[in-house]
Picture 1 (cartoon, helix red, strand yellow):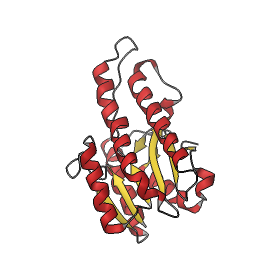
Picture 2 (tube, one colour; picture 1 turned 45 degrees about the horizontal axis):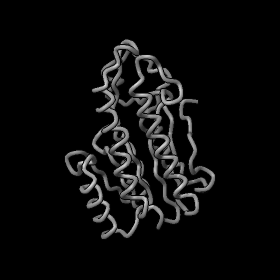
Picture 3 (cartoon, rainbow, N blue to C red; picture 1 turned 180 degrees about the vertical axis):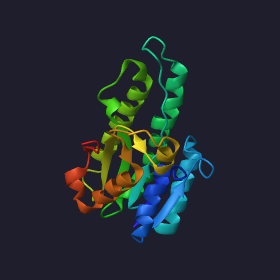
Picture 4 (cartoon, rainbow, N blue to C red; picture 1 turned 90 degrees about the vertical axis):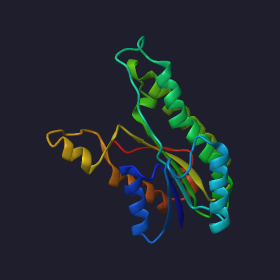
Length: 209
C-alpha cells in the first residue's frame, strides 16, 4: 500500500510510519520542512507528484496538531483560535481536497485524523481548541460522505491525549492516565484496513475505552 503521513517528523508520525513500513508498505512522510500544508498550491503539487509516481494512495494519516488554552473562558485569546484554525483545520482542508481523488481510486483506502474528547466535551478554558477539533471532525465527516460509494473510508480516532517514550522519560513519576501510546494509535490506524470501508466510514472511534 501507499501511505501518506503528514506531520511525520513527530513521535506520532514516526510511530505510524514505522508500523506501516514494518508491514512492507510504502510510506511517504511529509512535514513542514518538505511541504507547507498551509499553501494549497504546494499541497496540490505534492499530491500531483504522488499521483505521477504511484497513481493513487491507499491511506492518508493526517497528524498535524497543536494545543492552546486559557485559564478561563473570558481569557480565551482569539490569536490562539487563529493558530489552531491553521494547524487543525486549514491543513486538513488542503490535504483532504488534494488527496480525495487519489483515495477514490484505491480499493481499500483510509483517511484518518486524530481528534480529542474535548471536541464533544469542551472545557471553559479550552474553547478554541475544542471548537477547532469539532470543525476538523465535521470536515472529515463531509469527506466520508464523499467517499461513501467507494472502497475508501474517512475515520476519526478519538483520544484524551497521546504519550510517547520521551514523555515518560522526562516525567517518570507521571501516570499519564487515559493517554494513548503513539504505538497503540499506530496499530489502531493499521487495524482500520481489517474492516470493510462501509462499516467504518464516517465513524468516531474512541481509543480511550
